[in-house]
Length: 455
Image 1 (cartoon, one colour):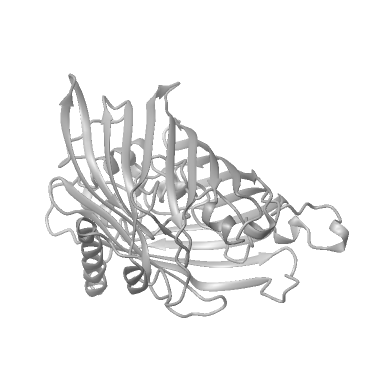
Image 2 (cartoon, one colour):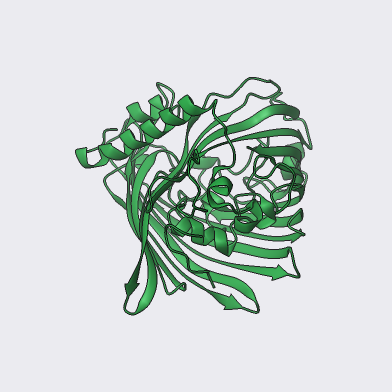
């Protein structure tokens, strides 16, 4: 299914965990110093490949099989040229409008020149080591201010190829700061649709911890292997980052509460990949067992998350692609600390989340995606305001004019323009019925237009 390529072709941390903090700090500092140099899409320049080779629709982050292989092999594929500076940048500009003006007087619509801006240190460091490190800032509604950058996704890899049991295999290690960011599929929280979205929409009050609840707050060291281009396995553990490091990288402000992980918390992932009907199919399971100490307490809450996922990606004709991605997660919460401190109604809760999306891209340029998300679980008024049920849909149409072979300005000019609409049939227990004259779920329906550039 995957084309075979070699690696060089197409709180306070313990002493053992201080190296990741030092390494990431140094990388971010290096990126900030070198920004005035040529900042181009670094992976494309490094490999000599177009964005369409690695990404569905010629724009990230949804990966093609070639893109998955590139990531598994440690971001080290190169076209043999020298002097590639592994730096890139990204800016997202947008306009968004809620269906109904919020009762609290907050904004109903806004335009942002820089809804989000990022710097990336991304590319090959040695024959077997590569990195994807992102620093991101979020703009202020209705302003043209340049965002203050903060630590975002980080994934530093070592990878090599071996023969195991007579089967050719990729074996690697990922040092990262967000469970699921190491994943190569398009189904898990770090990389699932929607890849960009409005900021005014209230959203769900509850979701499983694995759904981004630990992003940029932890360190993980995961070992992984892909055997015979078919069987994927990943096993690792996550520990907390220190408060001082989180404050220095703008993740936390002084005085912000910090509910941090306790000890080493295991994460695991198994998946099958194969060919069906001319397309690439994946099916897998993943999970996280976490212990969290709420801010100011000594007791711990336990979160056991487990998920199943699958995807199908089918090339159609010469340049069209159909992609379907889905995942279901279930979480069991044992709230020993929160319940004892009157922070929840229940000593234990459950949550579940289901996501499904289907995309079609014509000529790797014009895309249409429909996605749905469904969240449910135990009602808990104190912890998350009552009924956590949220059911939503997203329809997105987008145009990516560059990023293909022969594109103007490639690989310096990369842009996606899109129009997205989000609507709710239920939001945090609210329906679209009268609700006694109170707010409806549909009040939060959102029209969202965006320009997403990388360079």
